[in-house]
Length: 183
Image (cartoon, rainbow, N blue to C red):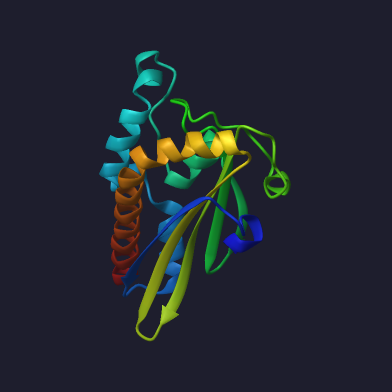
């Protein structure tokens, strides 16, 4: 489904994890997972939001991670039993992230210079006895200046971004397996 929203992109990353949990338990885990279950995310996002925290402008995230993305300006682009796609528009290279709220219907056509569009998904595939969970993040910039700025930012944050996504997938697997073993 990412192809429906960002078929062309400047940057991306893909990560996967296999689990014994059934697909429905995996999607439930994706929706319910909290920041506390992904400590590396909390630590790296605290570093990013340090200027705002010092100005006491950013409350601590509570509740499911996806709710936090929605509160920050991301929108659900598509939802299906086997895939969830979120997208956001911003100047991610700025300390605040420069998020600009757009409606899901506006996301695909958004082209105002000076921004980047980011979309990420969680896709679930059943493979014999296992469930494969894949997340892909794609970023498309709206002009050459934004591409250069994002490229500099990406060189710095990409290792942390990859670490967060890997930890996020592992936490999804852990939660899904725990819930399906208890059911």
